[in-house]
Length: 490
View 1 (cartoon, rainbow, N blue to C red):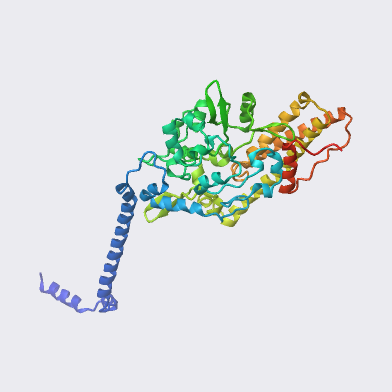
View 2 (cartoon, rainbow, N blue to C red):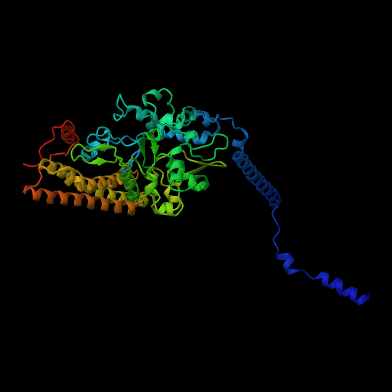
């Protein structure tokens, strides 16, 4: 290296660097701040990792501490030892002060609110006592208190959907023998209300069908219920009980009060009444019109399957038993109740509206169905009295056969909607369609009676008795039951 080059390097280093001089230097405390900030981030990340691991452990923990559950264990508290969250939510079924516009958990008295039903069920148990059902928690208590059970009542079949004690008794007694037993004889054996064993396998907690009637109904339709998906099972466990059914007695097949679903022709209202007509089944003979009536039970599943929610593969449990999360656990809320009492967890999962809008939309649909239902009831009640008027004028059973058949079909259609939970919401369009058919048939029957009366020179309109209150309706119904019915033609 030449001396000239060396000199140039020294001269360059002698010049000041403006950028170096303008760069700010860190304060003395910055280093410590960085250290503490880094430590804090590390701690937070550690806590997050710990939380994630705890959540994973929580989600696995139930499988690690399960106690054995007997195959026929009917005490829900024993199941609750393994599944405390589910059991805790189930116990909320004890609440009886919840109320929606058309439902809830309190025992609303349908006969006080709707005296027409006293006439429609005249001579039958539902004309005496018809309360809105409380929760599953009260299933055994409520059936023991109902006035529909008489001292000489013998159909043990009525216990079928009330308790997890039933599968055990069916196993030990035999299914046919259980149905044929006396209701009162099993009162001491059936003590636990609807619960875990009704829907779950105790070893795996898989959903299962514990009542034979649903399996038999599927077989009658040529379907294999064992092929049902898990999502379908989340509705089918409900369909064990929330369906239309009747008690079959057949001496040729040695059946007595055998629980049967009328699905041999299908599950629509038309197919079921056709099934009942062919089997010549009726629950009671109406004392006013002498019409053989089929009392619809609670065909919730059949109605639900015609609605948009079923079409979109939404299950009963999705709305009435939505999922909940606590910590790292996701579980099903076993407080079975109206979705309107839990909109945020039930409806809002799919419908991104405010709770007020959801409730308003639902209640609007329900109100329209209710108003239509009441108009049908008025037509049905008057049709029963019209037939009584024709009989009073001397019409024969042969002449009254067709009006009575129309009246039978009309009342079953009305009851198919009325007996449903949800006031038509499970399938609004189907509910309105069925109610329209019902009122049409009732009015057809009334028109036929009017023509029949005209052939007997009866020109005066029938004089319908006052049934505007439960007491008045009961007195009218009791008169016909006792054979002292009021005169319709005056």
